[in-house]
Image (cartoon, rainbow, N blue to C red; front, side):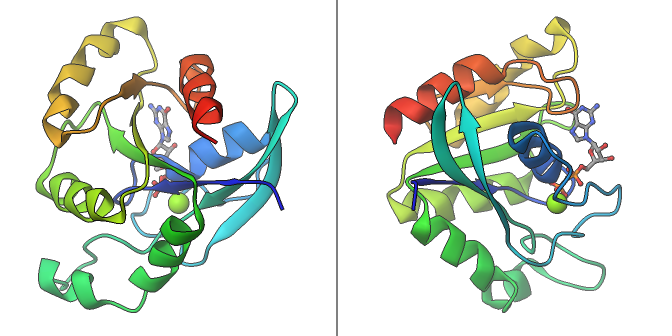
Length: 167
Ligand code: GDP
Ligand code: MG
């Protein structure tokens, strides 16, 4: 099996949209409602002739009535853990329009502990004016932040070039 890139992040940042964009197909469900992806969704995809396995995840995030602490022990978290464990590279998706939120920082801590290479994907940068907002995510402490738009297919080249070099 080819090496795996796992897409991780809080709900509604556009993980499934990114998955579908890279897979070139509508496999994952893109939804306005946070937390729609409950199960792991994976696909064998190719970028510029290089095959890899892409995994979309869901399940990490606050749903109504939940507290952060509950999330940390939630069973739904297990599928994300499995995805991270099996991955050679992590795409940590954040929302460039909303900016950095506490849950992003919590996830960053957890991802750092995995020891895997993490590329921060600042999604929803639909136009170049958004790109400068990537600086805010430098606070997360990872080396690289990429401004992309999953919906418009913007910014994917540098992200994928870097990711494939790490596989
Ligand atoms: P997930 O919960 O992280 O999987 O997020 P989804 O892929 O389901 O997307 C959540 C919402 O963000 C949906 O309303 C999408 O249409 C929207 N979205 C996803 N990617 C983009 C993007 O690149 N630009 C904009 N403007 N909206 C996006
Ligand atoms: Mg999703």
